Image (cartoon, rainbow, N blue to C red; front, side):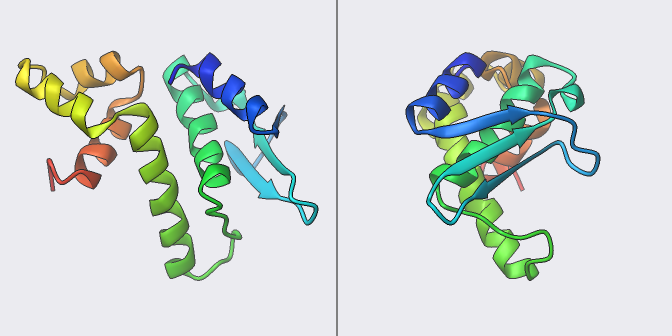
Length: 135
């Protein structure tokens, strides 16, 4: 998904996105009691389109997987929610089969993979660990 597609996806799923200054976070999301979901993002923290894509995508993943947690949730609750969000991101940003096809084509450098999928190298590493390609 491109950054524009993420914004469109959020709109199609009635998830409101607000860009504003967040002094203690880069982005956050919340599910309101009426069922509405909102994402707050501070795009000033993003140094590139890839970073903005990851910030928005991560919060959108929490919304789509209903994987919410509080700042002070127990580590097991937080870990489970973060894992569910990462799985959604991986499926939508770097599908396993697409990554395998890159490997078969000889594209194995993290920076090359990051450029191909328009994500950061750190995201590539997290997804490769999720898929079991690296430890």
